[in-house]
Amino acid sequence: MSNPQKKTDTAAAGQLSLFEVVIRQEIEAARTQATPGSLNIKHQVIAALASALRHAGKSREQIADEMTLYTGEEITVHMINAWVCQSKENHRFPLEYLPAFRRATDNLDALNVASQACGAFTLRGPDALRADIRKLDEKRQATREQEKALEAEKKRLETLLREVEGRP
Image (tube, rainbow, N blue to C red; front, side, top):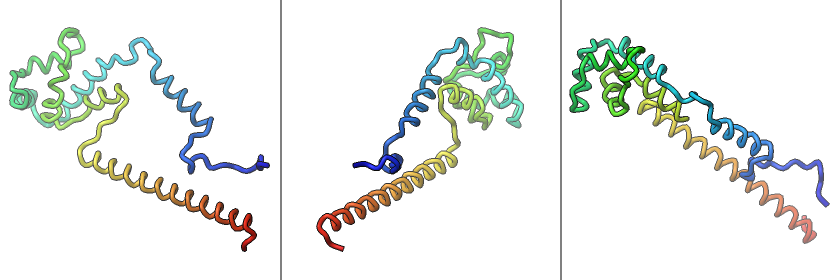
């Protein structure tokens, strides 16, 4: 007969509780529901570009020259001005210029706007490596906890075996 008050450790067994499954399903449903205009990031991109230009410590001419060098295509100050002008509907910032803009301004804001809209986060190289190291530490900790749970289960079964066999 089972003990109705006995609690099971589903986390140690690698299983999700029913509550966790329901919550995860609700979160995923909220993420996938389409809301009109919810992913229109035009104004956030413009604001991020303008902020990056203001804080770059370089003139727009220098940034245009660097972007021209990085892309191999002619980038002008007029193009940069059009990208950050709210009133110019047909002059949007081309995604293929983002790496050159990021390097010329040393700013990740525009990339962050785009990646967060896609459900991701952007980290610079060293921070990404730190995050990977942390993830490995968490996996190691989970493995240790699983090993402890397995060892406890093994001891429980060995004790039960001794009882069944009538040994101390």
